[in-house]
Length: 171
Image (cartoon, rainbow, N blue to C red):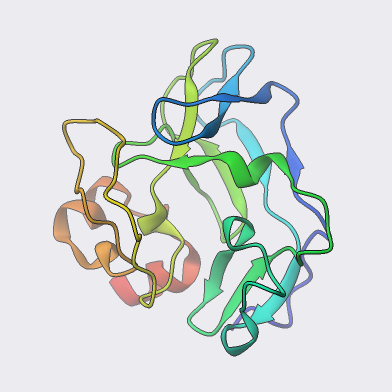
């Protein structure tokens, strides 16, 4: 359980990222400059929320990341929107995790590339994406759920780069 751990009060976002219109969904995060594999691009922050307190009148859903089966890190509706909330999902992303809140480049990212992450690496089993995935990659799963980490091909693709609570389940 991660509730004793201290987290940043707000997310840190690399200054090389900016919000633009996305072909995937609404707005997305894009690189203003190249980013090398392994470079830290964001560290998620916010408040720790017990799962039972997550409601639309309290928390902005796009800010939420599961830190264990029963807790999320995220922002209250009273806090300003942060850039990390614009990062779109992709079934073949160029970002992944090194812990429950540190996002690094999985692949080389060129100027003007959209920065994406696969939600399978940080969501708990309750999550189901309401819309069909529109990432457009050959690896697209179409229906995204919090149980996608259980798929063997996903475990192999992202080995060691899930949120720690998911890594523990895989081991």
